[in-house]
Image (cartoon, rainbow, N blue to C red):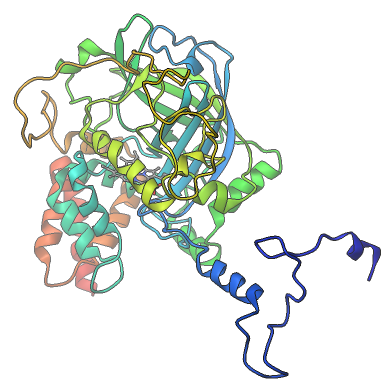
Length: 492
Ligand code: HEM
């Protein structure tokens, strides 16, 4: 035995007893069957069988890093959030990037929106902003989300993603035209997580100390510059190096090349919302910058890799319902559904004590609740009372809501989202198309037509409905797409 070997600690069982042999199972005689008394073998095999937890039902594939948010502008006129109270103030953050449709082991370099889940560990609790790299989304009502995702995932019969299902749903959901135009454009396959923007996407509420409130949209503009992958390169990379984005993020941080984003907000006074030309709570629409110019408020830097991917990335949880005083939800029907869905997913996927894992718990304050026990409870509350009101000096409520109450009107019912003067499902998709250069338009048509052409030969109706949405966004867009799809389907 060398000196180095002598210094090594003893391998033990989970209960801490020394392991005598980690190479040979105990058997009845030489070459005989294994013995039940080999508890080291059984413990190892049993633990191994339970290594996986359910992957996220969407956004299963991702990578994350810790960082710092620095406030660079005075926004106290708009929000009383403590972490946004003083220019120069820094807040620890954790940002998980992801793709949406692929499973945990899928490739990074694919055409798909990228998730942007950002946790601010503030002194008033954790604030999570769970967005994407796109400012809009495919649908505008949470009740359609499971159906939408079913079309992106595997067909119940074939076990594969099917062009029939994808285009059937999009064709029948014209509100998707804007996001689909975005996704099949150049930005649909980012070169890395560092070379893309992030967006809060939804409209959120900010409330100031005086109680006034505002509607806000967040933008994170990459300081590395936008870089995208051409389709052929992406396809090759996805096959050769499925972990390309994950590795790029980790190694750039290891090398001290810390990625940064400039943080901006668009702010709408509450009184503007009712008569704004677009429904400001419709997630399929942006607020054109000419209407509400983005204001720079901070810098986000990623500067530390997680040490343990399972503990810190797989078990990390982000919820659009994690707000802090001075920040709250808007009536966006997608956001309202998400306020339920995430915490529910966390309880199922990670467990009832997920909030208390090191990556998820508050870092700049502590959680003080009367909720207790459950799977893998660590006894952190010691002897303290577990009810309220109590006269034993336990934690008490503040009496002040985190965000402002908003007026509502009308009767309960399954209402469609209100339509404002310039709202329709196509106007912003058409505007985006017309913004593209001629080259970008050509690539967009090639990307879309290649996929639409895969719809089954006997389902021409699906193709027609899909193309009709693009035609309504812009006549040239529709015509070019129709020509390209017809040509491809002729060749089949
Ligand atoms: C009503 C619509 C939606 C529902 C019901 C929904 C539901 C979910 C669920 C259940 C998860 C998995 C959570 C987990 O297991 O930890 C998830 C993940 C995620 N969703 Fe959504 N989602 C919706 C829309 C959106 C939108 C509009 C965005 C972006 C603007 C978004 C961004 C994300 C991100 C980034 C993640 C990954 C979070 C992480 O890194 O852990 N989702 N979503």
